Image (cartoon, rainbow, N blue to C red; front, side):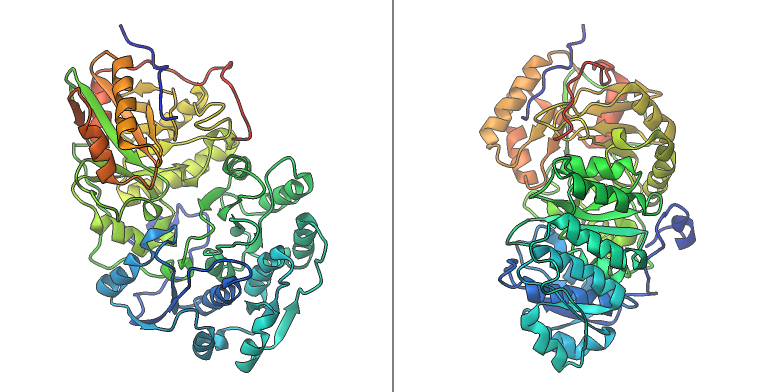
Length: 556
């Protein structure tokens, strides 16, 4: 008798360029034939306070976006504790593998940077130090008017380098709410901005800002806001819907929601309602540089397949565990100790094939035999499938299929927080949505679902859909996590038992290996592709979908 699955814990290119571009909804960013022989590297300080070094960082980011618009000239070296952890390892990779020689300036040396690159700006725009949102508006103006971004303290510096004032926001927004500020920007600049890229420059609110994606937004002449998707802010939400509705179909929303206004679930759901793709991280750095760097001619995207794609496996009567890390390889445990010690799956941000080719090449070439790559999240970008209008679903999933083929990916991860998260509501998928995934992805070897635990399971034509049974929080001690898994194993006594484990990004592989090593019952830790093939060989899990009575929380 099967034990019900209700017990859960945890509280470019290897193909021709033209062939890839067919799947791409956005105009292809400018791409050079080969990486530059020389480029300028500018280190940035650890200070990201509005009253600290953000003004000089904003100046350098806007200058980077303008100078890199037609050629990769400037790469910013972010501090060691930057969320996107491979920003520094990527420097060595660009030097070693792509032949780039960097001319290093002093930390935050805007004077030297302007000496070399002021000619790529037509002037400057002044933001108001007393109105945080005016800086976000200034980034819009920067891209449209080819102006570097400054506060009043930096005006003498840019004028020293011959730049003239183009716009001045001082005093313009005093006492105004954000919806009025961004409405003014919309009225004056939106028609001049890109319909293929929109930047939500959220993340930390208040006295801190980490606008790492701003260089690419400036490069692409994107419109910038940090508008709320929270119904508690109806005027901001109305303008946000107007902006999203004016973008091209299946285009990109860059950045991240504001931590001070709404939730990740609200923001991502809203983007999905319009059938747009989201590429998260307000602080994703240097995309104006890396998007232009092609793959080296000798490189091909090759995954680690532990079993043949058409293999049929018969599992033994034991516990099988597969560990999966998501949230992007660049902000997780890739550089931490233990990688390669046990089989591990890593979710690939598939749009990096055009946004960040050298970063993907870095990961593919740096992988160990135990590292296996999968596609996600839910499609060609970060999206919640329950929020996507059914009519927009097929075109988006065609993009995902084409990107998976390019990147040699054969498993798709699905995640949906539109009706809950790992704490409230649910993360399950209705049958009609599961039907659509099986229809759109006939060549995958299987699907995985969830972020926290979920209860959607299926098996069709030898292709399983398995949800996470366990979520490993970063703060969960090794002994406690091992006890959790012991309990999971006891609650699911039928063998084989397939335990899919989601590892939150900053847990090291070494920690996961230590947890698994404490289990009293022998378990078989296997690569995810083998795990799915084994799960197809003996279905001891129950088919289940989201049910009408399942709880829903739209503010996860």
